[in-house]
Length: 131
Image (cartoon, rainbow, N blue to C red; front, side, top):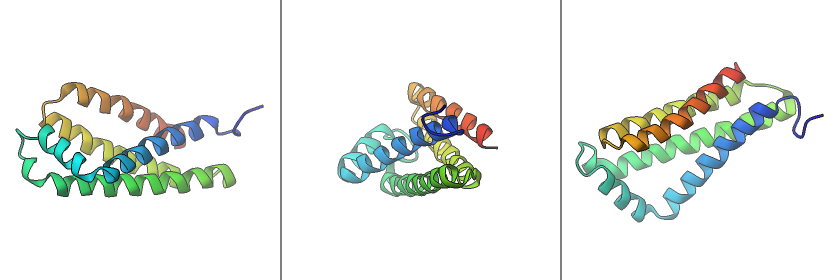
């Protein structure tokens, strides 16, 4: 017997990323000025410094698209045992995480890049399981 259904691993991975992206979007939109200030300071010694609001908007759009795909994918996984949309959501999530990784590397924040790597590993496992 399983708490979820026969796809508990997939559901838990999707829930993990849904919570992560939901909280990230809420934090960024809830304190836009603070987010711009934080990232402007984080990237002050990089070529990205002058376009932080545009990059932040780009990240928020990717996070919202990812969140939407993961939510729809979770629904289809639970209701119809269909993996396709969930897998696409995880693939878009991987692209989003790669953007984070590039930013962390440009900022020379190697600890931050290692943290993104942990998320990326789980993301790749999720794609593999959904394949």
